[in-house]
Every structure is written in structure tokens, then in C-alpha cells.
Image (cartoon, rainbow, N blue to C red; front, side, top):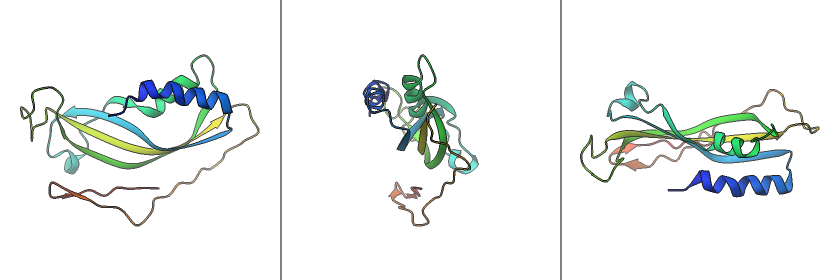
Length: 145
């Protein structure tokens, strides 16, 4: 697993150095947890408690003492929830997981505040051809945009 809170310092330093007016980000992870439940994908997500929001972490680094960047668009893409092992006692919960873990990947565009770049009516899209791997007998559509 990545240590994004630590990595975000380096990303923010690179952004401060180069001062881009627009920043395009891919696979901006949002990790959430919730109670273990096999029906979650069918009945709706159960993992709603935010554990790590890579977008908010990066924005906090960039905008710590004053607002320098704003979000122009966030496009949710891949979203998957499944039982996950949370502690050092594997096999104690549902399908070996004590919680449900949920990963949502997003594409994001940030805009530097106070520059001549203006954004209006952002548009997003999703590719019609999907990569759909089969994991443990389940087909998992990997949405990309």
C-alpha cells in the first residue's frame, strides 16, 4: 500500500516549484470502510467512513495557509467494495474480512487560483469499452474516463 499522506509532501513541493495553472490527476483514491456485508454491492455501499481521501490530503498540502488551488472537476470512475482483513487475525470475519473496504478512483482537474485560467461547464465522460476482470468468480467492471 502507498503512504499517500507522506508522498503528498513531495507532490505539493513539485507543484509549488512549477506553479502550473491546471493540474490533471488520475486515479485519485478515496478509501472507505464499513461493516462487513456481502450484500453491499447489491444493496448499496456499506463502506462510507472515509479512511483516506487523496484529493483532500493533497488540497490540504497545497492550500494549508491560503487557498492556492481549487477543484474544477472530479469524475468518479472505478468503485469497488468487498470484505477486507483489517487486523493481524486473518480469517475471523466475513470471507476472512472484519470490515468492508471500498476503493473509489477519481480523475480530477485542479485550477490555480488568481490566474487567467477560467473554467465553466466542465464535461466528463466514461469510455464505453471496459476492462472487466473476474476475481473470485465475480466480474468487476473497471470504469475509466
